[in-house]
Length: 443
Image (cartoon, rainbow, N blue to C red):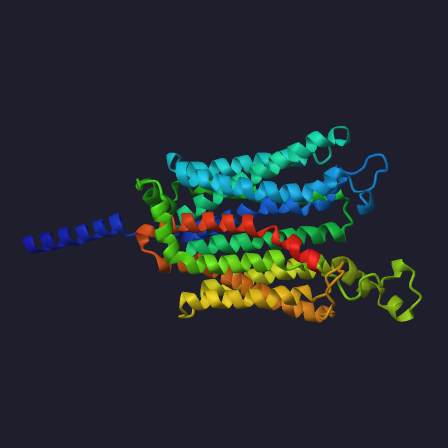
């Protein structure tokens, strides 16, 4: 009898130990979906803000002639894009630094909720002013637009550091969900552009579509985050973050981490240089301008008018944006599922080779206008094949940057490694963004 009682006690203790130390399961992949949504909302609002170019040109137009024609572009119209490119990286990088050094005073969950609420309010504020007549105070509205884009990118900077910190304490696959969500944001943007074109929406209505979709995704993500507050899997891993009382990262830590993750930074740097310097947004269809609205008398063209219309009107949003972003997402998915046993230096070399190949290739595509270089790759099918290879390889390599970090450092260093990577990624984005202007001038 005593032996049976001891055996029962031993089994009960083993059961208790399993309950105490084994992490709970993520039932129905609720938290995996949450990470995916957070990745989506991390990139979506800022992307939509810059995508609504026609809306901003309308807001800052010359009201005396009521046109957005580039020949009559106002100072505010001309300065808008450049101002956004200055404000975005500064706000992003500044708040990344602040989060690294002072974020420890605020719980990670509180930071996430705060970011989503502020981003939601900024989107609401932008939507309110879509239909408001701002013609009499364009200068003031321009300043407001810069503050809004600064606020959105400040939240993006905080979000980036916060999420990489979170991913360090969750199973490795969850950073994959976050990265996949970021990739889907570009597809959302391209789809919104196509919807606007298909329904012939005005610049104001298109802006409402963009910001409305962004606001909807933010609300869904916020509700999902609030719903996981008592989820056992989520609470278990989040408590591991709260229990840590690490000292603030210093220069010695940064240099130590950089020696280990340099290959990931090389890959991300080459990706950003190739992305910023490639004039894909200027590449037009070989059939551009051959539609019936140009008064053509060619019967062959007239019979294929609908085909010409599709190429002329939908070429850039479909091929350059939708196909590009979809293939990039496929590349990210492949990186999540397929991990060949290759040294990190090989990934670095491949990223450099990719950059050196695609920059001149895109320069020789049918990017317009151009004054110096010839068009040696004129056909649409050639450009589409190039986009497919470029996007899949880029999505794969960019994802490898984040995935490889976990294999380059110890588990104790992973949190700091992600923070350093996030900071230097933001720094690279700030430094490389003006490169595109140089390459456009070389065309």
